[in-house]
Amino acid sequence: MGEHGFKDTTDWVVGPVVGHVTPHTARLWVRGMDEGPVYAWIGQQPDLRDARLAGRGQRIPAAGFAAVVDVHDLQPDTRYFYALTATHQPPAGPGPFSQFRTAPPEGAAGPVTFVYGSCFTPGNPYGEATVRRLLTLMQGPDAPMFGLLIGDQIYPDAAQENGLGYIARTVNDYRTLYRLAWAETAWRDALANLSWRMMWDDHEVDNDWYWTSPDRVEAQTSWYTRWLRRLGGEPRELWANISRRRLHAAVQTFWEHQMMHAPPLRLPPEGAESHRPLLLTSDRGHFAYAFTYGPAAFYVLDLHSHRYIGPYGRSIMNAVQWADLEHWLLAVRDVPFKFLVSTVSVFFQQRLPFGGGRWDDFPDDRRRLIHLLNAHQLDGVFILTGDLHVAHIVEVTLEGVERPLPTWEFSVSPWGQHVFRWGALLGKPARFPGVRAARWLGTWAVPNFGWMRLGTEPRPWLEFHLETPAGPRVRVRLERTARGWQRVLPEPKA
Image: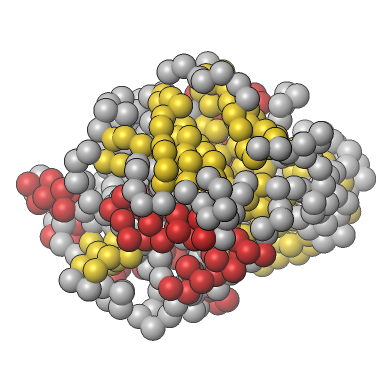
């Protein structure tokens, strides 16, 4: 498994991965080569001399021989060491073994520290330096308690960098992409030693893909992707409508690697219980989920299951998820920190119409989101995004109903992908009805991820670092004062 963890005698294809944890439970995931059991051994000694059999799962053929082991009866905010085996025998060897940390009690004052980011290919020129920076942080005093992977974990369409050497088409192709990205890079240690929650963006399927109608009968990539592939002589399957074979392969493997170990879904798609999420025409289910961690609440949006652009209009989410989001926002109104996790930027306004990729391509939906926050006067909402291959912070003042509402968007990426050096010139902070003011606090075109710490004592506060392979690039601190949320550090410099 690498320098930070124990390698079981079982030759796991991918994993282990620590998924969703609560104060008393943990979900441990692995993918094997064939059908059979998986046993989870848990202890609090680094060498697992106190190991106990804590759970059993089954490698499922329908899920590519992936398995989840649910572990119960854990203590809050506690570090555990673990191993996953294919036999009913305790793990042997000196270790060190992999580890994870359970969540603090709901509503605990904190501090809570987490990281998040998006966009990684194993063959990118920027390599794994950013992930190795994360591994260094995981061993130090600023160690995160969990992480968020918010899209573009694989690149099926990046033939020169994804490790395949060609554009993925089949289930085996997509499964291979996860193995290359997660089992044969520094991600292997990061995924095994930190709890992760994940969500897809376009590159879990294909570049800027979308449905062509709300019935979800056909799907396409962006117009410029189709055009470039056709000029390049690619087979029709790669520049016409996305074939059912490719779409099934992408959705199936996204489920196997990212959703099986996620928090409970708000409304799972049909077939998810049998590990075959089909995205049927009449199904209004989606992959969005919510969770709490100490004094913070998170809603992770699914912006692809029902995204469509076509003659019937355009929408980034269906009515069912909109209603669920509003219900969640009202339910967590009194929680000090409310994070909306969006795989794409809300407040980045493109100067050129690329189409289909971000919230500004869905102006009605974006106004609806801001109207939701304004109408309910929701304070303490922060937006976490990725996707752009350039990091930014946007400081926003919403109109509100009773008084203006300050909020901030913290956008980070890439872990390891091409940097969009001209990104800040091709976009601007978005201004539209409901937004009183929006301005950059800075943009940074470097490989990066976000590090965030928050707490409620002596009053609610939040601190953000932009982490790069060379260390932190910028620091921003927010505090809730008698006049509401305010930034209390000087403006960061690009």
